[in-house]
Amino acid sequence: MKIVVIVRQTPDTEAKIAANSSGNGIDETGLKWILNPFDEFAVEEAVKIKESTGAEVVILGIGPDRALETIRTALAMGGDSAIHIKDENFGATDSYATAKLIASKIKAMGDVDLILAGKKWIDEESGQVAIQVAAELDIPQATIATKVDVDDAAKTVKVQSEIEGGQRIIELNFPALVTAERGLNEPRYASLPGIMKAKKKPLEEVTVDAINLEELGLAQENLGADGSRYKIDNIDIPVINRSLNVLKGGNSDMVESAEVQAAAENLTKLLREEAKII
Image 1 (cartoon, rainbow, N blue to C red):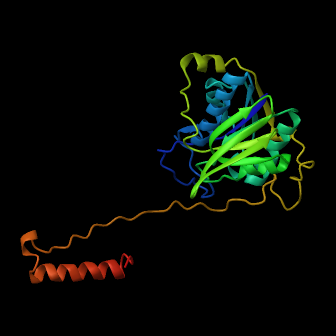
Image 2 (cartoon, one colour):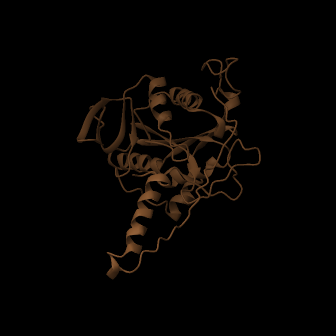
Image 3 (tube, one colour):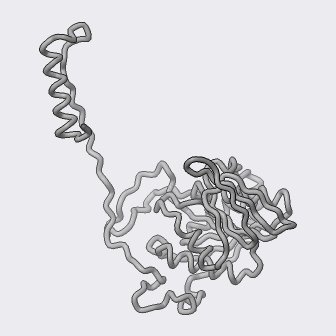
């Protein structure tokens, strides 16, 4: 069995995000990058399946040079080999073009039984790429998995998902794609021996220039240089202004006082006219 895990490098969840000087992207100066948290669940599940079935696990990532660190983290967790689709303009590439690039590489790999990915990328809050990859490959998919059971002999995967009002269980024939939800498993840490071994594991680099964009329908005149259907003109970081308004109303023993009554009326007015919550 061959399993492909799609991974992405995202800013650390604790990172302070700021716009760059051009205003059309984020300032990456001093930014810490990590393996997308939901992709960790996908990698862990792939490794667990490998441990029980002897499957081969291939890590597939797309992004600039720095994405190699994330790919090697996934290898250190237990992946066998990796593919890096190198795209320096990745931050401006939309999900449509990204999915086509990833799907084209998976298709070229030949027999792939199972594709795993996180349910979404936390930097863009986007869960579109994985399901678009399934559409490009014309294979069945199941999303937000909280339990995955693989039957290697029958070439099927049974996926359980938590939905409003209960659970959903779907059985898919291989090849299939599954996206991982939080709670699917407990991702292991990349051990020091694992990190050292990851440096020696096979890693194929593919530049976007080496991919025939015309064949993928990404070289049309109305698309960007990398096949994107949109471009980012401006990014605004929301500014949250916090203020404190203390209303004096006497102490708790004076609940009937005129001062407390006035404070209550003032509070009601503020909640209605300024906070607009009543």
